[in-house]
Image (cartoon, rainbow, N blue to C red):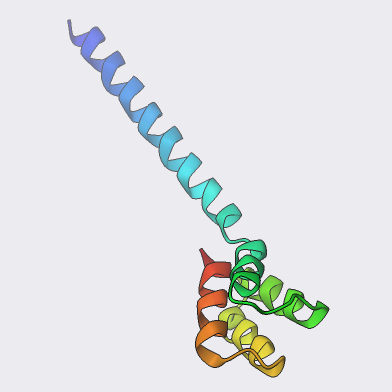
Length: 92
């Protein structure tokens, strides 16, 4: 009986660990600059190379990447609020 309970506990722990690893491993893939670009297009702003670069920068894990995304978009005449929403999407 003790062996069965131990095996069940081990199986549960391995499953929980595997599930946790999958969630952690998948998280960085969610940050996608295409979400940023889609938001801009949906808001009526055409995509240009500088806007694409800003969204890509926003999707990285580099320090200050959200601000660099926002600044890059604002520099291309995207309103501050729209730029903030687009960069938020790049970070998801």
